[in-house]
Amino acid sequence: MNDIFPVHGMDAVVFAVSNAKQAAHYYSTAFGMRLVAYRGPENGSRDEAAYVLTSGSARFVFRGSVRAGTDLSRHVADHGDGVTDLALDVPDVDAAYAHAVKAGARGLDEPYTMEDEHGKVRLAAIATYGETQHTLVDRSNYSGPYLPGYVAAEPLVAPPDVKNGRVFQAIDHCVGNVELGKMDEWVEFYKRVMGFTNMAEFIGDDIATEYSALMSKVVADGSRKVKFPLNEPAISKKKSQIDEYLEFYGGPGVQHIALATNDILSTVDHMRAAGVQFLATPDSYYDDPELRARIGEVRVPIEELKKRRILVDRDEDGYLLQIFTKPVQDRPTVFFELIERHGSLGFGKGNFKALFEAIEREQDLRGNL
Ligand code: TYF
Ligand code: FE
Image 1 (tube, rainbow, N blue to C red):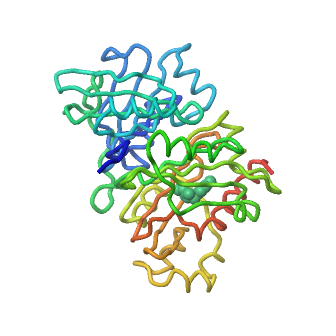
Image 2 (cartoon, rainbow, N blue to C red; image 1 turned 180 degrees about the horizontal axis):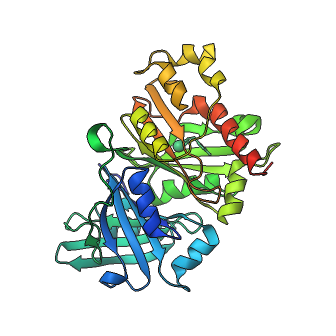
């Protein structure tokens, strides 16, 4: 088809962290991910250690600086642990980069090739909000564990004890927080630069002023495999959760990564047992007769959801189950969502109120009123 910027999906989410060795352990144990590749001082990487972990089609890379004075250690000093790169798997890196730059994107790396005994990878990179970037990757001629420079690595722990051996299967969406008044500019950026289009779901002025203190729109590629919601703060009584993020992160950046699972009950049980903390919805959410009527029948008794504080939302296409972790580092910045979709293509609009009230309770505990 004549998609001006075809994408196959996400290639990787790259994190800059203060201690990649410990991050690799946390994502192995708590998120059930499998270490597959490594690079570090032992194999020629002077300045950093990087761990590549996968779960289904999802790939996370954790980079940590091994010395002072690197750009990576500066990034972590500024932002804390965070996402530096939402890398995209594209069929034609050169064409994608040329189109992006012509459409006004800031080029960071012109197309280049990396090569080793496993083949060739073509790469380029463009800037997006804050200090975040999109690396464009074509690894169709490469059979190595990640990229040239990385060596294969063995899993750090035994596979998670969950059905089908995976805590989650894929990346569902990646959300960015941008400054007040900038959301529409970034929506336009993804339309112009990547040919993305708006998805129906959004949080407009009405919801913003009533309770969410944020505005949100979603852009996606033509195949809907890559979905990027974009949030900006909204003026409201309390400090917006987006303002809190921007203050503590030190600017715009990735707010949450939603992970798709086909068994959210096992996922949550595994993660909770491993010490991951989730936002808690009150009993009243599950006991609300209006909600019960609206969601109808789902694949498990509501009691099973209530026990775990899993949220449920239904729209014209089907339903979804979702739950949100608390921030996963010291700063109130990056968190994760777990999502099990049954037809619904939405983002849980019906849950926004309960979700934002739960987030506000956490904000209050942090003193950010
Ligand atoms: O991605 C979404 O749109 C949902 C809802 O600060 C959401 O996960 C939106 C904004 C936010 C937290 C969750
Ligand atoms: Fe989400």
